[in-house]
Length: 434
Image (cartoon, rainbow, N blue to C red; front, side, top):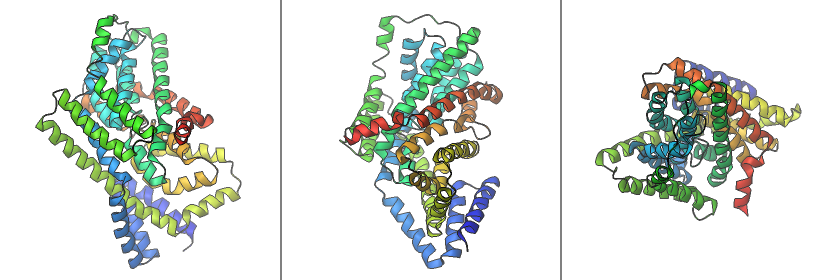
């Protein structure tokens, strides 16, 4: 069977199975294993099924996934996020829209601990949104700011999604972490500027707050310094080459236990819930990765990836036109599918083309993560919006959505900047190599 016929069947199959509500893991497994059985025969298909499952399970890099998840879950379940917002609000409260900016800052820091936007929304939402509304902030500004800021969490390292991309694209986890560090905080800064502009146009949406004394500001630091030190140590050990990403993840997991113990929040209930959440999330991710590897093998054995790359080069499509088209495609997919699934479905097809067109796959990973910031606040998928509705039920989904959509402007600006100026993403990784 011709490669383009197989490719078309797979393309239609992906969207049909997703449209009828089939989970992504089952969709990838059915198409991958079914295609291998039909086109390569039972012996090849079953050998790849067993071999892929074993290779994925023994992959040393994948050990970082449950460790980073445990780190984030421990800090999430034990309620460490409250200290971060208290400190940020005291230091930034006097700025125009200061409480909203403090929410962005606290959520960005929490992102460096959890790497999951839903965890950040679930943690920071009930802590910040009711407080802002009580202080006279507009509901749309309060909810939209936190939903949008939580989208930073997959970008700012350490990030589970970055680890998954590193495995799928066969790139260095440490290089990707460093590539996303500056873009993540740059995007947070653009969001903060957007809040200032919002309040400048609509000052009644964010009344001025009384400032905190220097004593109050400095007294808020002791409750947060252990988590800040932990994040610094995790990233520093990777940047300096002292530890691999997996070893740094182990440091983070152990450090989160110590912080919870130091804060007197390490109870049997907290530990049990953390371990259960870690097990469920890790199992889900591993199952998707194993099924996606079958799908990837099918694309490779049928030469679909390389033939598409050759076709794009033969028709002399401009690399930048291709990059623009692929970014629009990712924004579209993000409206319907979660980010990890998008990576595992598209990376085997897209990354070889990206490399063949002369782009850096590490830079492309950073661009992709910034692109994904739009996914969690763009309906109809918009996972952060639904999580916010669940944790702050007094707000309507319409209010939350209207408040979040203006921040798509910040996401698009950040995406354009990282594409036009690749060194925003590549400077730190280049320093690592030296």
